[in-house]
Length: 260
Image (cartoon, rainbow, N blue to C red; front, side, top):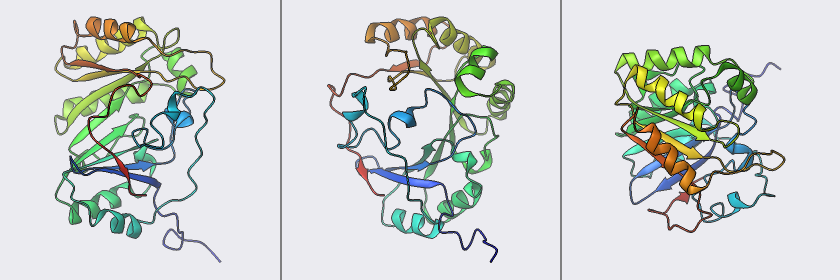
């Protein structure tokens, strides 16, 4: 018998939902990606790393995350979200745009929830801009050979899509990248900042600290290294911030709970 999407119990790529009651923010995590990043955070932790059970284990160099095995139908996804008070829904995970029914998911959520939608994307596939309010665009590298080594793919389309999104002025646009000493190093991060500044110096830019993955040779940057790098990037992009791991020593600003 021929299977159809309707018959398939895995009708979305959503495998995880978390929620902040304090801020009325829900996060949907999507599995599946169109890049093959050797340093993907999901290899370290596939689930929200702000949960009590995940927060500290991401700093264990021997820890490897379990892979998701359960996925939600659209109906069940809506049922999980229905009782939640939501001001914002964040679409993240691996790559939400890889879900074939993402437009249908967004249309259903827009019908049932009066909130804003934030999309995290690698930009390789052009996102449905008309259905989201904000895009957080992840630029892995500018140097073509480095990008191919990192992700297994060329970055021409990605950078072209970034320029198109910035030119559209239809969504709030942010950029994030991961600082990996001796790989996506200081010079490369500044190349990324320079590229963004050539488009629009007002675009917010966040530099994240790499969390070491078992079996790979690269280390995490120290706090002073990433702070210094952020200061240099601010010369090109005034709205630059950084995020660095502190092995769970800093208290979370707000609590996050698992919904699914």
